[in-house]
Length: 419
Image 1: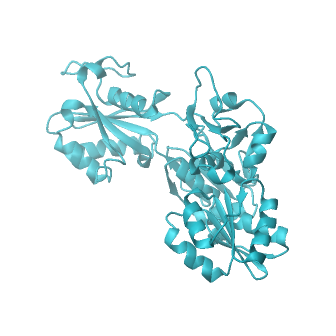
Image 2 (image 1 turned 30 degrees about the horizontal axis):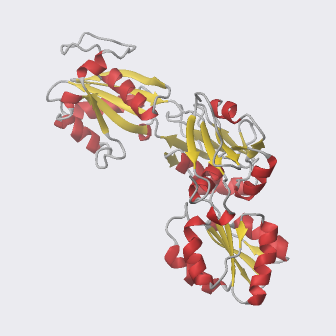
Image 3 (image 1 turned 60 degrees about the vertical axis):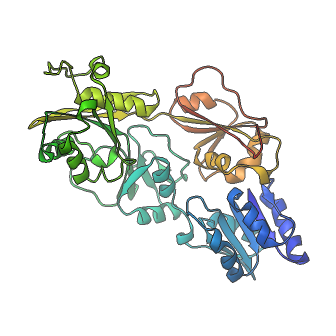
Protein backbone atom coordinates (compact mmCIF):
# COMPACT_ATOMS: atom_id res chain seq x y z
CA UNK A 1 0.00 0.00 0.00
CA UNK A 2 1.15 3.54 -0.82
CA UNK A 3 -0.04 6.18 1.62
CA UNK A 4 -0.29 9.71 0.22
CA UNK A 5 -0.51 12.27 3.04
CA UNK A 6 -1.23 15.97 2.85
CA UNK A 7 -2.66 18.75 5.00
CA UNK A 8 -4.90 21.55 3.80
CA UNK A 9 -7.34 21.60 0.91
CA UNK A 10 -4.71 22.39 -1.74
CA UNK A 11 -2.39 19.66 -0.52
CA UNK A 12 -5.18 17.07 -0.47
CA UNK A 13 -6.18 17.92 -4.03
CA UNK A 14 -2.59 17.31 -5.14
CA UNK A 15 -2.47 14.09 -3.11
CA UNK A 16 -5.67 12.75 -4.70
CA UNK A 17 -4.35 13.63 -8.17
CA UNK A 18 -1.06 11.83 -7.51
CA UNK A 19 -2.82 8.77 -6.05
CA UNK A 20 -4.72 8.37 -9.30
CA UNK A 21 -1.42 8.01 -11.16
CA UNK A 22 0.16 5.67 -8.60
CA UNK A 23 -2.53 3.02 -9.01
CA UNK A 24 -5.16 1.19 -6.98
CA UNK A 25 -2.90 0.60 -3.98
CA UNK A 26 -2.49 4.34 -3.36
CA UNK A 27 -4.74 5.73 -0.62
CA UNK A 28 -5.29 9.26 0.69
CA UNK A 29 -6.40 8.94 4.33
CA UNK A 30 -8.95 11.31 5.81
CA UNK A 31 -8.26 13.45 8.85
CA UNK A 32 -5.10 14.89 10.38
CA UNK A 33 -1.81 13.59 8.97
CA UNK A 34 -0.15 12.54 12.25
CA UNK A 35 -2.78 10.08 13.52
CA UNK A 36 -3.28 8.69 9.99
CA UNK A 37 0.44 7.98 9.59
CA UNK A 38 0.70 6.29 12.97
CA UNK A 39 -2.36 4.15 12.22
CA UNK A 40 -1.27 3.02 8.75
CA UNK A 41 2.53 2.85 9.20
CA UNK A 42 2.69 -0.95 9.81
CA UNK A 43 0.69 -1.55 6.60
CA UNK A 44 2.59 0.78 4.29
CA UNK A 45 4.96 -0.31 1.57
CA UNK A 46 5.64 3.33 0.64
CA UNK A 47 4.52 6.80 1.71
CA UNK A 48 4.44 10.18 -0.03
CA UNK A 49 4.13 13.38 2.00
CA UNK A 50 3.11 16.81 0.74
CA UNK A 51 4.92 18.40 3.66
CA UNK A 52 8.24 20.07 4.37
CA UNK A 53 11.20 17.72 4.75
CA UNK A 54 11.85 18.72 8.34
CA UNK A 55 8.25 18.12 9.33
CA UNK A 56 8.27 14.67 7.73
CA UNK A 57 11.48 13.72 9.52
CA UNK A 58 10.00 14.67 12.88
CA UNK A 59 6.77 12.85 12.07
CA UNK A 60 8.23 9.48 11.01
CA UNK A 61 11.34 9.35 13.21
CA UNK A 62 9.53 7.75 16.21
CA UNK A 63 8.03 5.11 13.88
CA UNK A 64 11.22 3.94 12.16
CA UNK A 65 12.29 0.48 13.31
CA UNK A 66 14.24 -1.45 10.66
CA UNK A 67 15.54 -0.43 7.23
CA UNK A 68 14.34 -3.70 5.68
CA UNK A 69 10.74 -3.42 6.89
CA UNK A 70 10.09 0.33 7.13
CA UNK A 71 8.23 1.84 4.16
CA UNK A 72 10.00 3.96 1.60
CA UNK A 73 9.30 7.65 2.19
CA UNK A 74 9.15 10.43 -0.41
CA UNK A 75 8.70 14.07 0.54
CA UNK A 76 7.24 16.59 -1.94
CA UNK A 77 8.85 19.83 -0.77
CA UNK A 78 8.82 22.90 -2.99
CA UNK A 79 9.91 21.91 -6.49
CA UNK A 80 11.48 18.63 -5.38
CA UNK A 81 10.48 15.01 -4.76
CA UNK A 82 12.96 13.84 -2.15
CA UNK A 83 13.71 10.15 -1.50
CA UNK A 84 13.94 10.34 2.26
CA UNK A 85 13.87 6.79 3.63
CA UNK A 86 13.94 3.10 2.73
CA UNK A 87 15.12 2.84 -0.87
CA UNK A 88 12.51 5.20 -2.32
CA UNK A 89 14.56 6.44 -5.30
CA UNK A 90 12.29 4.86 -7.92
CA UNK A 91 9.15 6.22 -6.29
CA UNK A 92 10.68 9.70 -5.99
CA UNK A 93 11.49 9.67 -9.70
CA UNK A 94 7.94 8.54 -10.51
CA UNK A 95 6.39 11.26 -8.33
CA UNK A 96 8.68 13.85 -9.89
CA UNK A 97 7.65 12.73 -13.37
CA UNK A 98 3.92 12.93 -12.58
CA UNK A 99 4.10 16.32 -10.83
CA UNK A 100 6.81 17.84 -13.07
CA UNK A 101 9.27 18.19 -10.20
CA UNK A 102 12.97 17.45 -9.79
CA UNK A 103 13.77 14.13 -8.11
CA UNK A 104 16.36 14.17 -5.34
CA UNK A 105 17.79 10.67 -4.97
CA UNK A 106 20.96 9.24 -3.46
CA UNK A 107 22.40 5.74 -3.46
CA UNK A 108 22.32 5.91 0.34
CA UNK A 109 18.54 5.81 0.29
CA UNK A 110 18.28 2.88 -2.09
CA UNK A 111 18.59 -0.65 -0.85
CA UNK A 112 20.91 -2.67 -3.03
CA UNK A 113 19.39 -5.80 -4.57
CA UNK A 114 22.22 -7.59 -2.80
CA UNK A 115 20.80 -6.56 0.59
CA UNK A 116 17.53 -8.26 -0.31
CA UNK A 117 19.37 -11.34 -1.54
CA UNK A 118 21.38 -11.68 1.67
CA UNK A 119 18.30 -11.22 3.84
CA UNK A 120 16.15 -13.75 1.99
CA UNK A 121 18.84 -16.43 2.03
CA UNK A 122 19.76 -15.79 5.68
CA UNK A 123 23.32 -15.51 4.42
CA UNK A 124 26.72 -14.13 5.33
CA UNK A 125 28.21 -11.77 2.78
CA UNK A 126 31.86 -11.08 1.98
CA UNK A 127 33.29 -8.44 -0.31
CA UNK A 128 32.61 -4.87 -1.35
CA UNK A 129 28.81 -5.02 -1.26
CA UNK A 130 28.45 -1.24 -1.54
CA UNK A 131 30.69 -1.07 -4.59
CA UNK A 132 28.90 -3.93 -6.31
CA UNK A 133 25.50 -2.49 -5.44
CA UNK A 134 26.51 0.85 -6.91
CA UNK A 135 27.61 -0.90 -10.13
CA UNK A 136 24.18 -2.55 -10.33
CA UNK A 137 22.43 0.79 -9.86
CA UNK A 138 24.58 2.36 -12.59
CA UNK A 139 23.44 -0.36 -14.99
CA UNK A 140 26.83 -2.03 -15.36
CA UNK A 141 26.80 -5.75 -16.20
CA UNK A 142 27.19 -7.88 -13.07
CA UNK A 143 27.57 -11.66 -13.23
CA UNK A 144 25.57 -13.68 -10.69
CA UNK A 145 26.51 -17.35 -10.31
CA UNK A 146 24.22 -19.66 -8.37
CA UNK A 147 25.61 -23.20 -8.76
CA UNK A 148 23.37 -24.79 -6.11
CA UNK A 149 20.21 -23.23 -7.52
CA UNK A 150 18.82 -21.09 -4.71
CA UNK A 151 15.48 -19.36 -5.42
CA UNK A 152 16.51 -15.74 -5.86
CA UNK A 153 14.49 -12.52 -5.75
CA UNK A 154 14.00 -10.47 -8.89
CA UNK A 155 17.17 -8.80 -10.10
CA UNK A 156 17.66 -5.87 -12.49
CA UNK A 157 18.24 -6.72 -16.13
CA UNK A 158 21.95 -5.94 -15.88
CA UNK A 159 22.48 -8.76 -13.35
CA UNK A 160 23.31 -11.65 -15.68
CA UNK A 161 23.57 -15.41 -15.31
CA UNK A 162 26.37 -15.56 -17.87
CA UNK A 163 28.75 -13.19 -19.59
CA UNK A 164 32.45 -12.49 -19.80
CA UNK A 165 32.43 -8.68 -19.80
CA UNK A 166 31.08 -8.20 -16.28
CA UNK A 167 33.35 -6.18 -14.01
CA UNK A 168 31.73 -7.63 -10.86
CA UNK A 169 30.73 -11.16 -9.85
CA UNK A 170 28.25 -12.24 -7.19
CA UNK A 171 28.74 -15.86 -6.09
CA UNK A 172 25.97 -17.59 -4.11
CA UNK A 173 27.48 -20.76 -2.65
CA UNK A 174 28.33 -22.51 0.63
CA UNK A 175 31.74 -23.61 -0.66
CA UNK A 176 35.07 -21.81 -0.59
CA UNK A 177 36.21 -20.83 -4.11
CA UNK A 178 39.38 -22.49 -5.30
CA UNK A 179 42.43 -20.39 -6.02
CA UNK A 180 43.51 -17.00 -4.69
CA UNK A 181 40.88 -14.40 -3.81
CA UNK A 182 39.70 -12.28 -6.75
CA UNK A 183 38.90 -8.60 -6.80
CA UNK A 184 35.36 -7.37 -7.36
CA UNK A 185 33.79 -10.62 -6.19
CA UNK A 186 30.98 -10.56 -3.62
CA UNK A 187 30.39 -13.92 -1.95
CA UNK A 188 26.95 -14.69 -0.52
CA UNK A 189 27.13 -17.70 1.83
CA UNK A 190 23.71 -19.20 2.70
CA UNK A 191 23.37 -21.27 5.86
CA UNK A 192 22.82 -24.74 4.40
CA UNK A 193 25.07 -27.12 6.35
CA UNK A 194 24.50 -29.47 9.25
CA UNK A 195 27.71 -30.82 10.77
CA UNK A 196 27.54 -34.20 12.46
CA UNK A 197 30.00 -34.87 15.30
CA UNK A 198 30.98 -38.22 16.74
CA UNK A 199 33.59 -38.55 19.45
CA UNK A 200 35.11 -40.71 22.08
CA UNK A 201 34.47 -39.93 25.75
CA UNK A 202 36.49 -37.00 27.02
CA UNK A 203 37.54 -35.72 23.60
CA UNK A 204 39.47 -32.43 23.91
CA UNK A 205 38.17 -29.27 22.30
CA UNK A 206 41.38 -28.94 20.28
CA UNK A 207 40.65 -32.22 18.48
CA UNK A 208 37.11 -31.17 17.59
CA UNK A 209 38.35 -27.77 16.38
CA UNK A 210 41.00 -29.42 14.19
CA UNK A 211 38.39 -31.70 12.62
CA UNK A 212 36.12 -28.73 11.88
CA UNK A 213 39.03 -26.96 10.21
CA UNK A 214 39.49 -29.97 7.92
CA UNK A 215 35.92 -29.56 6.67
CA UNK A 216 37.03 -26.22 5.29
CA UNK A 217 40.62 -26.99 4.31
CA UNK A 218 39.99 -30.42 2.79
CA UNK A 219 36.24 -30.49 2.23
CA UNK A 220 36.11 -27.01 0.70
CA UNK A 221 33.17 -25.86 2.82
CA UNK A 222 32.74 -22.36 4.16
CA UNK A 223 32.03 -22.86 7.85
CA UNK A 224 29.93 -19.69 7.90
CA UNK A 225 27.33 -21.82 6.10
CA UNK A 226 26.81 -24.01 9.17
CA UNK A 227 23.19 -23.92 10.27
CA UNK A 228 23.34 -26.56 13.00
CA UNK A 229 25.39 -29.34 14.58
CA UNK A 230 24.10 -32.81 15.31
CA UNK A 231 25.30 -35.74 17.39
CA UNK A 232 24.31 -38.80 19.41
CA UNK A 233 22.12 -37.87 22.36
CA UNK A 234 24.58 -39.28 24.88
CA UNK A 235 27.30 -36.93 23.55
CA UNK A 236 25.50 -33.72 24.43
CA UNK A 237 27.35 -33.61 27.76
CA UNK A 238 30.81 -33.75 26.10
CA UNK A 239 32.53 -30.58 27.27
CA UNK A 240 35.12 -30.78 24.49
CA UNK A 241 32.40 -30.50 21.84
CA UNK A 242 30.71 -27.57 23.59
CA UNK A 243 34.03 -25.76 24.08
CA UNK A 244 35.07 -26.27 20.47
CA UNK A 245 31.81 -24.88 19.14
CA UNK A 246 32.16 -21.87 21.40
CA UNK A 247 35.77 -21.37 20.27
CA UNK A 248 34.55 -21.28 16.66
CA UNK A 249 31.91 -18.70 17.55
CA UNK A 250 28.94 -21.01 17.08
CA UNK A 251 27.77 -21.84 20.54
CA UNK A 252 27.40 -18.38 22.09
CA UNK A 253 23.95 -18.16 20.44
CA UNK A 254 22.20 -21.50 20.17
CA UNK A 255 19.66 -20.05 17.72
CA UNK A 256 22.50 -19.45 15.26
CA UNK A 257 23.88 -22.98 15.27
CA UNK A 258 21.94 -25.27 17.61
CA UNK A 259 23.15 -28.70 18.67
CA UNK A 260 20.65 -31.35 17.58
CA UNK A 261 20.74 -34.76 19.29
CA UNK A 262 19.29 -38.12 18.27
CA UNK A 263 19.08 -41.55 19.94
CA UNK A 264 21.32 -44.33 18.70
CA UNK A 265 18.50 -46.48 17.37
CA UNK A 266 17.40 -43.61 15.11
CA UNK A 267 20.88 -43.04 13.71
CA UNK A 268 21.50 -46.76 13.22
CA UNK A 269 18.94 -47.08 10.40
CA UNK A 270 20.13 -44.10 8.33
CA UNK A 271 22.04 -45.18 5.18
CA UNK A 272 25.45 -43.54 5.08
CA UNK A 273 28.20 -43.56 2.43
CA UNK A 274 30.94 -44.72 4.81
CA UNK A 275 29.58 -47.14 7.43
CA UNK A 276 31.89 -48.50 10.10
CA UNK A 277 31.72 -51.00 12.93
CA UNK A 278 31.67 -48.72 15.94
CA UNK A 279 32.00 -50.00 19.48
CA UNK A 280 28.58 -48.58 20.34
CA UNK A 281 26.93 -50.72 17.66
CA UNK A 282 26.01 -47.90 15.24
CA UNK A 283 27.38 -47.84 11.67
CA UNK A 284 27.86 -44.08 11.83
CA UNK A 285 27.44 -41.12 14.15
CA UNK A 286 28.88 -38.15 12.25
CA UNK A 287 27.40 -38.85 8.81
CA UNK A 288 24.12 -40.24 10.14
CA UNK A 289 23.61 -37.32 12.55
CA UNK A 290 24.44 -34.79 9.81
CA UNK A 291 21.92 -36.36 7.42
CA UNK A 292 19.27 -36.71 10.12
CA UNK A 293 19.66 -33.08 11.16
CA UNK A 294 19.54 -31.89 7.55
CA UNK A 295 16.30 -33.79 6.94
CA UNK A 296 14.77 -32.24 10.05
CA UNK A 297 15.73 -28.70 9.07
CA UNK A 298 14.66 -29.16 5.45
CA UNK A 299 11.09 -29.96 6.42
CA UNK A 300 11.20 -33.11 4.34
CA UNK A 301 13.15 -31.63 1.44
CA UNK A 302 16.19 -33.02 -0.31
CA UNK A 303 19.56 -33.36 1.43
CA UNK A 304 22.99 -34.65 0.47
CA UNK A 305 26.39 -35.31 1.99
CA UNK A 306 28.42 -32.14 1.46
CA UNK A 307 31.67 -33.46 2.94
CA UNK A 308 32.39 -37.04 3.91
CA UNK A 309 33.69 -37.75 7.35
CA UNK A 310 37.02 -36.35 8.46
CA UNK A 311 38.74 -38.06 11.38
CA UNK A 312 40.88 -36.65 14.11
CA UNK A 313 42.15 -37.75 17.51
CA UNK A 314 39.03 -39.28 19.03
CA UNK A 315 36.59 -37.34 16.85
CA UNK A 316 34.87 -37.64 13.48
CA UNK A 317 32.92 -34.91 11.68
CA UNK A 318 30.89 -34.85 8.47
CA UNK A 319 28.64 -32.30 6.79
CA UNK A 320 25.25 -32.64 5.09
CA UNK A 321 23.66 -29.98 2.93
CA UNK A 322 20.03 -28.90 2.88
CA UNK A 323 19.43 -28.53 -0.85
CA UNK A 324 17.50 -25.43 -1.96
CA UNK A 325 13.97 -25.72 -3.28
CA UNK A 326 11.75 -23.31 -5.13
CA UNK A 327 9.19 -21.26 -3.25
CA UNK A 328 5.50 -20.83 -4.04
CA UNK A 329 3.60 -18.13 -2.15
CA UNK A 330 -0.18 -18.29 -2.56
CA UNK A 331 -1.45 -14.72 -2.13
CA UNK A 332 -5.19 -14.04 -1.96
CA UNK A 333 -5.94 -10.39 -2.73
CA UNK A 334 -9.40 -10.80 -1.25
CA UNK A 335 -12.34 -8.40 -1.29
CA UNK A 336 -10.67 -5.72 0.82
CA UNK A 337 -9.14 -2.46 -0.33
CA UNK A 338 -5.45 -1.69 -0.77
CA UNK A 339 -5.34 -0.08 2.67
CA UNK A 340 -6.19 -3.48 4.21
CA UNK A 341 -3.45 -5.44 2.49
CA UNK A 342 -1.16 -7.22 4.92
CA UNK A 343 2.58 -6.49 5.08
CA UNK A 344 3.25 -10.24 4.69
CA UNK A 345 1.44 -10.30 1.34
CA UNK A 346 3.39 -7.29 0.10
CA UNK A 347 6.67 -8.83 1.30
CA UNK A 348 5.98 -12.06 -0.62
CA UNK A 349 5.27 -10.09 -3.78
CA UNK A 350 8.53 -8.18 -3.42
CA UNK A 351 10.63 -11.30 -2.85
CA UNK A 352 9.23 -13.17 -5.85
CA UNK A 353 11.19 -13.36 -9.08
CA UNK A 354 8.02 -14.47 -10.90
CA UNK A 355 4.44 -13.34 -10.25
CA UNK A 356 1.68 -15.50 -11.73
CA UNK A 357 -1.94 -14.41 -12.02
CA UNK A 358 -4.60 -12.93 -14.23
CA UNK A 359 -4.00 -9.56 -15.85
CA UNK A 360 -6.52 -7.96 -13.48
CA UNK A 361 -4.87 -9.37 -10.36
CA UNK A 362 -1.34 -8.49 -11.42
CA UNK A 363 -2.44 -4.93 -12.23
CA UNK A 364 -3.44 -4.46 -8.57
CA UNK A 365 0.05 -5.28 -7.29
CA UNK A 366 2.33 -4.33 -10.17
CA UNK A 367 3.68 -1.25 -8.37
CA UNK A 368 4.97 -3.52 -5.57
CA UNK A 369 7.10 -5.66 -7.88
CA UNK A 370 10.83 -5.19 -8.02
CA UNK A 371 12.61 -4.33 -11.27
CA UNK A 372 13.26 -7.52 -13.21
CA UNK A 373 10.21 -9.41 -11.85
CA UNK A 374 8.72 -11.64 -14.56
CA UNK A 375 4.93 -11.84 -14.94
CA UNK A 376 3.11 -14.95 -16.16
CA UNK A 377 -0.53 -15.93 -16.46
CA UNK A 378 0.00 -19.59 -15.54
CA UNK A 379 2.61 -22.20 -14.65
CA UNK A 380 3.12 -21.25 -10.99
CA UNK A 381 3.70 -24.80 -9.74
CA UNK A 382 5.99 -25.71 -12.62
CA UNK A 383 8.12 -22.60 -12.10
CA UNK A 384 8.39 -23.16 -8.34
CA UNK A 385 9.34 -26.82 -8.82
CA UNK A 386 12.04 -25.67 -11.23
CA UNK A 387 13.57 -23.61 -8.40
CA UNK A 388 12.09 -20.13 -8.81
CA UNK A 389 10.64 -17.87 -6.11
CA UNK A 390 7.02 -17.53 -7.26
CA UNK A 391 4.02 -15.55 -6.00
CA UNK A 392 0.63 -16.74 -7.27
CA UNK A 393 -2.01 -14.01 -6.88
CA UNK A 394 -5.76 -14.56 -6.95
CA UNK A 395 -8.75 -12.28 -6.43
CA UNK A 396 -10.46 -14.60 -3.95
CA UNK A 397 -9.57 -15.73 -0.45
CA UNK A 398 -6.51 -17.44 -1.86
CA UNK A 399 -5.34 -19.56 -4.78
CA UNK A 400 -6.01 -23.28 -4.59
CA UNK A 401 -3.25 -25.74 -5.42
CA UNK A 402 -4.16 -29.42 -5.40
CA UNK A 403 -1.73 -32.29 -5.10
CA UNK A 404 1.83 -32.36 -3.80
CA UNK A 405 4.25 -29.62 -4.84
CA UNK A 406 8.01 -30.17 -4.88
CA UNK A 407 8.71 -26.71 -3.50
CA UNK A 408 8.24 -24.77 -0.28
CA UNK A 409 4.61 -23.60 -0.25
CA UNK A 410 3.30 -20.77 1.92
CA UNK A 411 -0.25 -19.44 2.01
CA UNK A 412 -0.52 -15.73 2.74
CA UNK A 413 -3.59 -13.86 3.93
CA UNK A 414 -3.93 -11.00 1.51
CA UNK A 415 -5.97 -8.52 3.54
CA UNK A 416 -6.57 -7.91 7.21
CA UNK A 417 -9.64 -9.64 8.58
CA UNK A 418 -9.70 -12.16 5.73
CA UNK A 419 -10.56 -15.73 6.74
